[in-house]
Length: 103
Image (cartoon, rainbow, N blue to C red; front, side):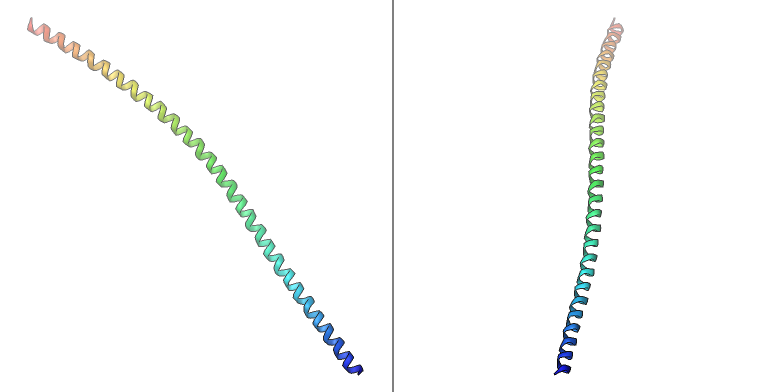
């Protein structure tokens, strides 16, 4: 009977040891998964920060381009107005030349 009890205790200890080993393996695996998740989160946070910076830079660039567009539009309007003034003056001078030639 002592041999049977010893065998049963050995089997119990072996089973307990096996469960402890499995628990240790699970803990190791879970730690690796946690580390990977933390690394992925950090990478995502860096990417999000970069995207926010990029968006901010894009907004500034867009505002700069809009300002340039307004300035260029105003310049085009000024040039058109000047061109119309010059055209009228040239027509007036041509009319005066025609009037001088007729006389």
